[in-house]
Image (tube, rainbow over the protein chains, first blue to last red):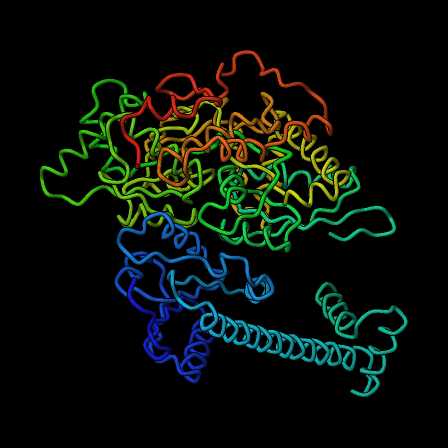
Length: 199
Length: 394
């Protein structure tokens, strides 16, 4: 085993099919002073890629079925330097748990200083969580937009069918929703469904 | 695990979308768990590594797991050591070896005898391997699902019996099951050993030929288990017992031919395996299309769930898996490790929950394994098992 490389030379392989998250991880690692980051989005022939790159640290997202391919590295270690799973010494259960919950896993080459790798993993955990939050916000914004559209359509139907103004149509939806203890969007959807049936 | 005042216990259980998760899925989706006061939240996972890690750190209460992986985790081989307990065996057998049409043709030409006989096919493979070497062709590449899996061990056991050295003569690669068919189609691998329904999927795509059922290599092999952490089983003996009862009842339901259609529909459902019920039906019937020419092979041993005492965790099975780990250089040979491996499988917990006895059903292999080659397996004498085979990994 050669001596441990300095941060800038530490070769970090990031395997992630999500292009946005991949870019965010790359930027984060580079900002933190890790200049030698290699990104991989495909998993066909994964082991050959890894042999060629010969990384010190491998980061892979947990949605990737090819994670099992990496397990083989613990068996066939003649070709590459022997990698081990992150925190195989169980010294830091909390970080491991946080990583799994965030959806990232790490493998390191044996002999690498654990403390430095922990920094890398913690950075990844925070980026993964940030991406998840962004995704969540995006999903919520999308669904709010969908709800708004549904309500607008239902208002239109009520205005036409009952000769109501827009305010009156909305008030009717809201009142019905309150009476039935349902969301306005649900009542609006019911109005749309009913009007489709009555066409 | 969350317990509510109603006494219903909610368990989060990880699974991989495979037909041998049938008992677990039926327990969750057809009321058997509810009858036992359990609510099963089944979480579909994409890798065995994920299932193992989430079970290990407590995100899962229990898991559908490769039998050898439960042992590897308990022994601390290849990863963090987390002792696991197996109170129920979800399935015996269920794998198959599928090869590309090109390899099928080569094996047929090299076979001296009926290719359906694994001794014949293994020797044919040795000839194909030697011929490729003589021509300077790259070695054959064969896919399996995980280093600690019967897929790995059955492939190795089979080819080594024919004189092929798995670590030198061929390239064995781990492939996630959903990628198997694709990899066979694009020539990335020449064959693979995988569970249902992925062999049939390759046959249906016209890119694979089923060579052997796993049950032709090893007659009785613990394939997938229900695993919990050992300390969890100790802390919640009542819940463990109720889970075993629910799974045993579900497994019996799966085994009844009258329930095949319903079982296939439950297992194939979008949030479970998300495949066509017909492909699951074929698996449960043990009636598999071998190739696109429509040839069939039928075996009532292809996948055993809820039949022939399949639910009882059998320590002999654990010893056999451990012996394979030693044979292929994954584990050292020691009486302590053997004891630790066999203790993972807990027939006592199974019997406490659903009764029964250790007597093996009539007609089952006398040694509890029934491998197609070699002497009978003696779980007390792993060294003799290893000595019977010249090919192994030091």
